[in-house]
Length: 312
Image 1 (cartoon, helix red, strand yellow):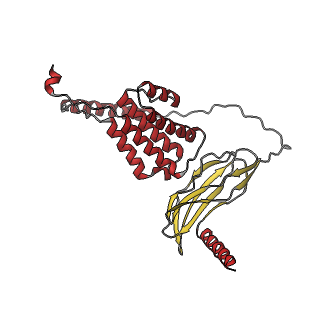
Image 2 (cartoon, helix red, strand yellow):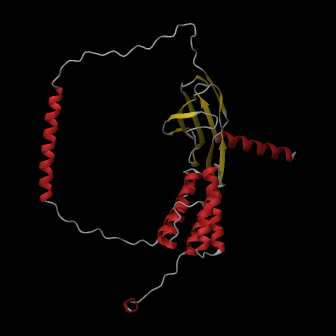
Image 3 (cartoon, one colour):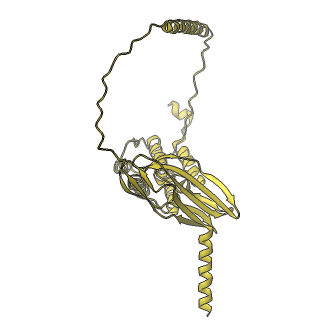
């Protein structure tokens, strides 16, 4: 008896939680002709005050062949004890057949836990434009000349051009006399270690991996490390592949444990860029921590030299 009551209680809690959190996707028209538009809309419903970590991300081109032509801004409304977010897209397809709209996901923070909400997948049917083959084919008309009328409009353009040129010459000589020599801009040296650590801590504090795609996140992270290696170790890392960068760092005499940290970051970055790999939420923060550790453990040793020693 107790087991039955506990089971019903758990079932009630699961039903109540799913009713409070939902992600739905709908199509205004699920059948169109080639080149016509249909509206795709997702709607996210969460309890009021719930923090949304990541909204559904709809790509510009879906694997099935559907293209996003236009998208509207995200709308927010409050309905009772629910916060509702929704966004509308204009989509189309340029071939006939059935096209799959994949399931989208959103992440919300609930009871200090990250909860993923998934939508259902949909199908869009696209038909070809009917052509009446019974009608005769029309010939293309030849190009014919149109008799032109004489106009003095060109004279006004000539006068306007002369006036503009005269004003330009006048202003040039006027401001040339008043030209004041500006002092040379002072160059400020920036420590590459401080610049890299500042950018990495900023990424960690902002938790940007919840607002941008994995590809953009790891592109920014690896670019910070590439600039750090260029200005601190004189390694021309800007155009290097991941394997070339590891070889260059190894030849530079960097410790093996630091090379292993860099190698792990580059592997995840390559999968995110080229294989559309989506790491677990905790993996992003771990990659930033590894990058900070790499910079701290590979920064050049600074030496202080007195003025008397520099004069020798």
